[in-house]
Image (cartoon, rainbow, N blue to C red; front, side, top):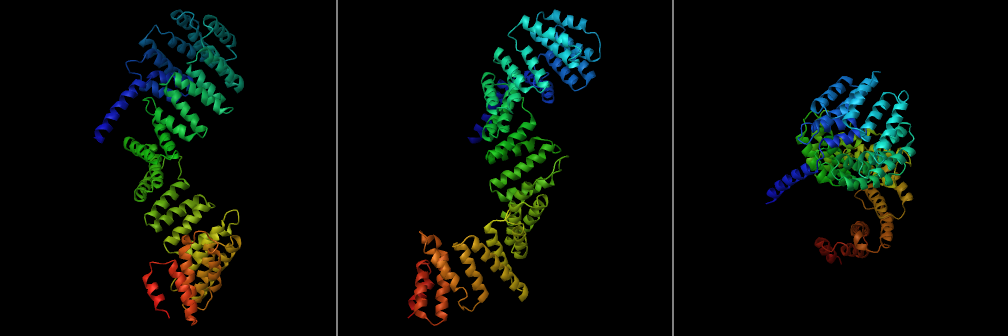
Length: 543
């Protein structure tokens, strides 16, 4: 039943995608906001669709080529537009634009265009743009005449105001540009170009207002791929990650989205903590893309990141291996997180030696990253290499107070005690490690007094120092520990520390021949270890 429902959902989704499509018109919208590459892709993608006006599509493909300096390609597109529909005036304007750039006469071409659509404000502003793009100074009077004509013929058409705002934006007069764009969409409340250009111009001044304008526009033109995408991008730029992810989720259902947008959506889902969704989409993209596509590299990275967050360690290890085996795209680099996430997955999967190698590569990229240094030290400790573990924590402590935390002294003390506890060490090395363990536990005891774990560590060191002979070296530390424990409200939470202390004290007094005191401590120990039947029998046997 679930499989049937899933495939039915896919079919319904496909139907909704077709219904929500604007076809080639999305490409025109992208062109009008100067997003030429995406505009070209959409126009070409939809060129042979039944609903496409080819004459119009070829005009905008010609304009894109002209703006990109591909004059021959532009001319060919304008010719194709005329062949598709000789009654469409715009391709003659396109030919005039080429002629103007070459210093040629455009009178005949413009007269032909104007006769095909008389007193057309929108056409007049396309002519104005042809003059402006050729040379705004040389053709200043022609441009001014076009603007006057457009406003005389249709005072409410927004195109002349958008053009005027564009010229202000070219002069970096952002305030006036935004004001005129606002005037333009006041004339036409559904004008996508004016709204988007206003939002892009105004975003750095007032991002909230810019976003609100795009939200208003999306409510009016819900099927525009451009508006859906621009709004998602602005949410992202304004650090509204959850909204950006939700908006991208709507946008990528539009057939006029781009492959790179799916990559962005994977990232947004990840940063929105929707790890399984991000993982699923990344895996789906890898399956669809050509293996040589650079996006595969980034999607394999996201597989690794998501699997680590999902704590699927074995799968994360395999994803990491696949990621690092993938060819790195030109201009890309490995990031610190690549190695740390891979290292963590290896560590948690029980492969500390390989994890160490990954963490070392991360530290090579960022030598003063304290979290990396701690991770590497702890990983060496997991591999029971306390010499290297202590070496990294010593490095951290030696970096100074701007880098270490008080707990780093505690950990360093513990790792030095681990060295001292290693079998086969010579006496001098053992003594040096024990002295350093003592040194750092004393330092952290000064920084964080009356701490249960720290005082217990002091007792462990003293107990280790005296060996099997319970001479009372740890007596002071365990008594200090008990006095701290007595201040705690829920003493059962500290049962293991009570057991350590009472065990030591009972054994000490028993060794000294004071069986009565020893029995008192054994009984106190039993209170915190009631399931220990061997201890109970032993206590009952004492006279």
